Image (tube, rainbow, N blue to C red):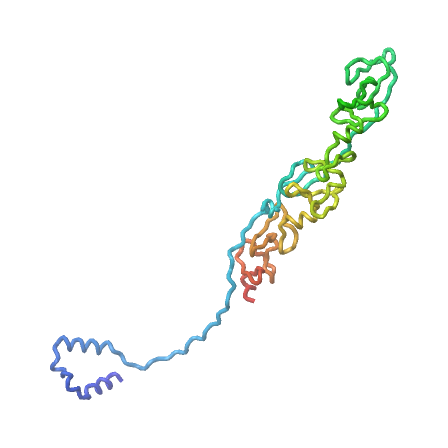
Length: 301
């Protein structure tokens, strides 16, 4: 077909203003020859277009979750937010498991009148004045007193204790009145003197009926308390208010637990898994859909 087109072109008359081939210069003839050689003629070929492939949108893969241990306690901090241990005698501090409060009562008693020492027996010495007692003497708290020396230790009281009993404080004997008005510990909660049993907890003194959960008001009794910002809480309220909970199982993430922070939530490491197949995703890339983690395979479903 290439020869037929060339022959047809030669047979066509040239326009009047187009010079004949003999009139062209050698350089012009060379240019025409090179241009003709570069032109190829042929039938166009057709190929069926490839069928378009469907594009499946993929959910964006968030970065791999960070792995850590609780301490942020709170309980992350030890916790997520979990934290220090509260003890019965310690001061207020970070949150954590507390102990039971220590209960004590003032040491009350009565002196015992004894007859004078017999000949040949050991002569008692008065605990207050230091003199030997030749007549009847009083014993109390493992010590001996002259009857005149067994009195309230308060300087402006000095009442005799032989018949009314005493309250012992730091080795000294006091009458009940002086104890109740001046020496009894003050309850941290109600600010009244504690005349009976006294609870010692977190470095403070309480009436047994005043040492209660700071949130629900339930009495601790012999139950453990949990300390947060210097205040005691029962276990249920402390877990509800201050611990970091796993959204997978709903239980608190405790100190020492491996945990994952992802999707702005916290998981036990064993609870961070694909919402469909249950494969664990700790330390792996995952796909988020509607706030739940998915593995790569099930993210497309």
